[in-house]
Amino acid sequence: MPQASCTLPKEGSMNRDEIITILSEDNPVKIEELFRRARTVRAREFSNKIFLYGFVYFSTWCRNNCNFCYYRNANSISRYRKTESEIIAISELLAKSGVNLIDLTMGEDLAYHKEHFTTVFDMIKVIKDRTGLPVMISPGLVENAWIDRFSELDTEWYALYQETHNRELFARLRAGQDYDERMNAKLYARDRGMLIEEGILTGVGEDLEDIADSLLEMGKIGARQVRVMSFVPQKGIPMEQVKKPEPIQELKIIALLRLLYPKALIPASLDIDGIKGLEDRINAGASVVTSIIPPRSGLAGVAQNSMDVDEGGRTVAEAAGILKNMGLEPASAEEYRDYLTTLREGSI
Ligand SMILES: C[S@@+](CC[C@H](N)C(=O)[O-])C[C@H]1O[C@@H](n2cnc3c(N)ncnc32)[C@H](O)[C@@H]1O
Ligand SMILES: C[C@H](CCN)[C@@H](N)C(=O)O
Ligand code: SF4
Image (cartoon, rainbow, N blue to C red; front, side, top):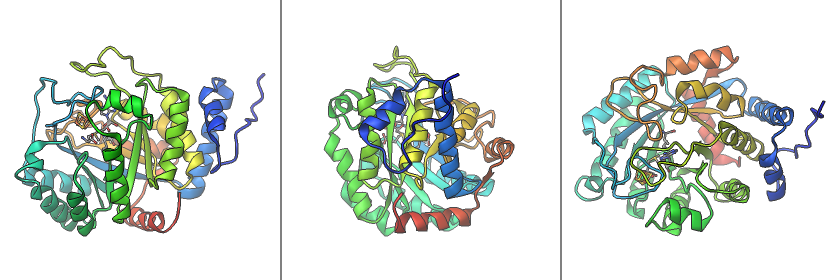
């Protein structure tokens, strides 16, 4: 019987080789030990509380052609651009349902980059005033003047995922985009006092060294929320034939992120496997349920644009029921705000 005791390094300090060793582990007993350790660390930092994020993908228009993305400009798909009043109403609905944060996300929609970019700022102000909740903005790459304005509006988070820290792979994934421009926007937001979220994709041609490099880089750049998402193949994209990776890889990365960064916010995204994917991600050490979308609101997901949306699978009620069966519960708005304060003051 293989040893259950795992040669897991102690939390918080893992070097590149140790991370690669754990990523290469395929012994189920050792993998379960990794998840158990991650859960123990999460329980110590967060007790039985899990945070919930509402997701408002308010425009699916985009100027870019990321090779992994359904919403890439060259894909002839139906797209939408919600009005300011629709976005505010959906945000209020999400707030009423019990989310701790509103994540306002868009493609790099030129309509916003040209004439009505001030709408984004007005929306953030109104949504913060009306819901009283923190806001994450995920607008893609924007110029520093936008970030200045986000910061002046006390927008808590700027989310901008590098996908990989391997520059050649980045060029293949985010065709035509500049690695440093994307990274510098994140660092500028951090230096303007915003909390930043960094993210990677898995199953997009990266190797274990790339993943290890990314996990270490996330801490170096001062990200306070760190995520991994498994690639989900999409119709009409260059990577359409690339297979979705085995879920275990994402789960191991979540657990490694927890051991590396005990205090970090780590998403269990509903956008990869829908609501049925929540339990495994939480059991791997995640501490935030993200991509909660109100049913029949006309909003889409990103990787799974419709899975569990209109059927009401991606709601606070659904998530809370699953968490309850795991001995966990949604955090209150106040608990989330208090946590953001500790995140600003300390390290992860
Ligand atoms: C948050 S959404 C849109 C925000 C903004 N347009 C941007 O690119 O930063 C973008 C993220 O969703 C994730 N994503 C997009 N397509 C995906 C797919 N097919 N599978 C998994 N994740 C995907 C990627 O990590 C990407 O950075
Ligand atoms: C990728 C999205 C988040 C963007 N800040 C959302 N679908 C999620 O999975 O949390
Ligand atoms: S990932 Fe973002 S920037 Fe890239 S094509 Fe999709 S929406 Fe546009």
